Length: 194
Image 1 (tube, rainbow, N blue to C red):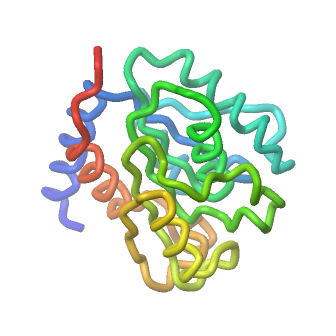
Image 2 (image 1 turned 90 degrees about the vertical axis):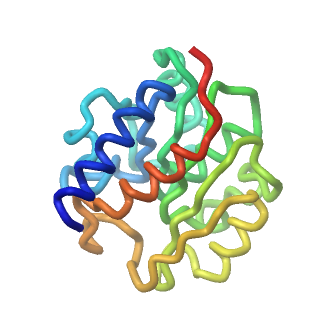
């Protein structure tokens, strides 16, 4: 990606941050230092990042409570940017109670059945706009299942081809293309309330 394109995307995201709070929702093990979520947090220090005590146990209620604590600090409606289990927790929270969330970017969501979350993750249209970014060779969700979930949630599906679990181990560090997906998604959303 050219430097001028990156600057344009950064400008779009700076404008988006005037309308929405951008909230990173990590998956298991809290997305390490070279993961795209951590790179984005360093690049955009005003963005929020969900924190909790134990990132090793796939406790959907704990994830949801951590997201709610982060949302309580936000001044504007949030865009949740979830990876893997963080994507599932974001969906489950929105299905369970009203929260000030304007949209979801769900990157490499894990298959709910892998974590025995079939009854917690909604298989119906989400109450806000969403985009699912998926890979054909993701070990935590087959692509046909990503298509199923994107359709069930009413999400736009972005096909990254063979990108494994879209994490640092798969080579997704700064991931400027992911920022362009986010910028395009957020720019199409109705204005948040002040």
